Image (tube, rainbow, N blue to C red; front, side, top):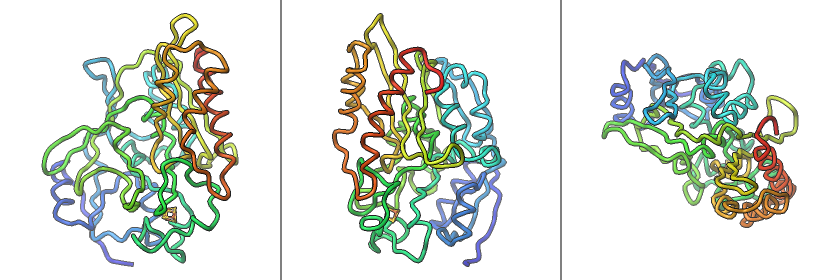
Amino acid sequence: MNNFTYTRATSVKDAAQRASTDQNAMFIAGGTNLVDRLKVFLDEPSQLIDISRLQMQRIERTANGGLRLGALVTNTAVADYPDIRRDYPMLSRAILSGASQQIRNMATVGGNLLQRTRCPYYYDTAFPCNKRQPGSGCPALTGINRMHAILGASEQCLAVHPSDMCIALAALDAVVEVEGTKGKRQIPFTDFHRLPGNTPQRDTNLEPGELITAVVLPPIPFAKSGVYLKLRDRASYAFALISVAAAVDLEGERIKDVRLAIGGVAHKPWRATEAEKFLIGKPVNTETFQQAAEIALRGAKPLTHNGFKVEMTKRAIRRALTVSAKGGGVA
Ligand code: SF4
């Protein structure tokens, strides 16, 4: 194990400044994924910058009626927040479907966005892994790839993004606020995470030293009928085989607007924009939802062991859209 220093940041600027001068520095807040990685030497930082006491622990109304979630608000606090349960129920349900109560009590908004894939080869240093060590190879290509990606993967990496919360945030058009030594910027949620391409070691578009300060939810009135459907091997404490976040807005019997994102299928939360475009103006019925599901999975490339995900995802999309169109609830 490498020795590392531990410092407690006094402000966001201080944290960003410290990180910008040391490319091997890492931020730590709840530590629910990072500490696991440190224990098995996946990360060997030169310093840990503790940001857990910075003032980013509030949920606030924005001027346009949305919500701003501070980066250090715990997952439990987000899931339990009355306005989120009422206005963005898919977000609350997505969070509650992930991890355990103890982990959700520690895990933060910012950390949830930055958790890394749970590809078993990534965590087992007896195997090579392009994400861990670029150019070393990807054993999942020929190994057990039941949990891996069917959309947007590359020869370099087939891993999937592990978060439930992020699938709901992608559907809800969230915006990530970040700050670094060059100032503040906002990143649309669907641009925050990356596909693997030739750089699977990079999960996000954060620049070195940048810190997530908040995630902003825009007002989406029909998100009240949003649903989150997660399919997994066991009923709790399991990552998604696939998941769907969906919200449908109706005008009479036709679809006026819709949000649709899929988890467990790609290296990043997968927003099904083509399927959304197709759905606008269509009548609400099973045929419409089936066609949308077909469009969403059009580019799917299943691997040796995960062909089942294609049909499973289509059925889940149909189910989630149907439940949301009926007013929402448990999908
Ligand atoms: Fe590593 Fe990605 Fe291959 Fe998993 S799928 S072994 S994370 S390169």
